Image: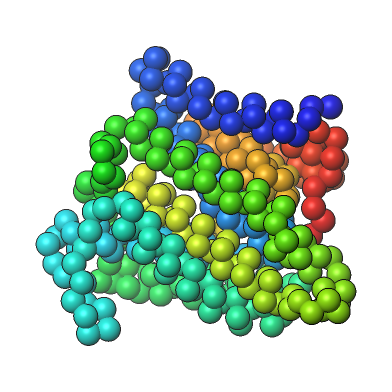
Length: 327
C-alpha cells in the first residue's frame, strides 16, 4: 500500500506537471481543463469540511457556489456597463478586481451559510438533507426569475477580471491563481482537521451527547463548520464564473450539489486530497468519455457504485489501505 502522504504529493505534483506539459505541447485547452478541475476541487474541499469532518450531508451547497458566481457576475456586469449597483438605498460601483470580488463572494456565501445553517441544523439526517435541498431550489428558481441579470438565459461577462501583476487571460496565469487558492484551502482544511476545533467537530459527528457533557455545543460547532464550508464553496463559484465568463441559474442546481458529494465519495470522504482526486477524475471522464457519448454519466455511476461497494475509503482509501470517515 502507498503511504497517504506520498500519494498526496504525487497528486500535487501531477496537478502542476500537466499544465506545464500543456505549455510545451501548446495545448492551452488542457490548461483550462485542469483549471476547471482545480476550481471544482476547491468547492469540494469546502463541502468536505462539513461532510467529512462534521458529517453534514448537504444537498444545498450549490447555493453558495451560485452566490459566489453571481457575486462575480453582478460586480463585473456593472463594471463593464459603467452602471451603478443600487443596494439597500446605496449606489455602489462595479469592479473587475479579483481580490475584491473574491472577498464579496466569500462574505455573501458565509452570511447565507450562517442563515441556512441556523435553520437547517435544527434537524438531522434525511431532514437536514431535504431542507438544504429546499434552500437550493429556492435560490435556483429565484435566479431564473431574476430578469435584471439575465434570468434563465444567464449573464455573460465579456472580459475576464483582473489580478494585480498578472494577465488573467493567459490560461497558465489564471491556473496559477486557482492553484494557489487550492493550496491555501487545503492548508486550512489540514489545520482544521488537526486543531482542537476539528477534533471537537469530529467528536460531535460521532457522539454529540459526550461533547455536550464537556461543555461544548455540537450545533454551534457544526454551524461554524457549515459557514466555513459555504465561504470556501462561494470562492470556488466566483472562480468558476470567471473561468467561463458566464453565470446562470444552473450554478444553483441541486445536481451540482450532488456532483460535489460524488467527487468527495470517489476521492475519499474526510481525506485531505479526496476532493482533488475526485475532481480530476470527474473532469477527465467528462472530457474523454463526453466526446464519445452523451451518456458518460453511466460510467461515472459505475465507478461510484464500485467504490461504495468495495472501497469505502474512496480511491485514496483503496490505494492506502485505509477507510475514510463514516457519515
